Length: 255
Image 1 (cartoon, helix red, strand yellow):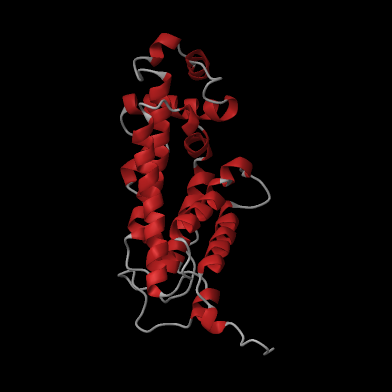
Image 2 (cartoon, rainbow, N blue to C red):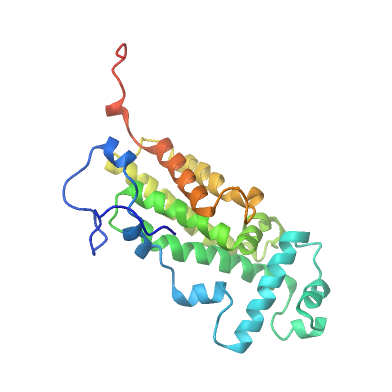
């Protein structure tokens, strides 16, 4: 993520005293240096997501999860067999069961790691003392950059919910609902602060999440747009849609 921006931030992560006009806040660059500290996820979780855990057993399990996530993305969950996963890893099918009990257990763990990773990224942002518009912008950026950094894992979460059995679905939905509630709370807080228009909060939440989640359908690594550029534009779109700028609109009849 970018570490640029201006020098408004303080070591505490709070903006300086005084309130800027909405126009100046709309057009100034976000303080990514200040917000980057809030976006730093739990180190242990990052190591796990990036397959660098120090324990050899866990590393093999992570390799299994990543291979499965890639196959689920390429072929679909139901079209992928345990034999396919074992072949990709160069091991016998029976060896898989030393690490995982079933294919659905693989699916659930991939999903819970994916949404758990997103939650680790956005919780400290959503609960920080930053203004609501800056929090929401940082959350959108974190979401976009997570999808582009871990496309297989997060694609499985976003695309294969329909494949989870009714008995296992609640444990995945609980994490998804927690994430949605964080977004709702920031939008509602922005309305209370006066920086966001009085929109329907659940509808706005679904709209914003639809915008960023659909990224998994079309994003290709190495494509025309870099992840940071996509994050910039999605952040800009979301904040322009929500910001309360009525006091800056021209009076009717004036040019």
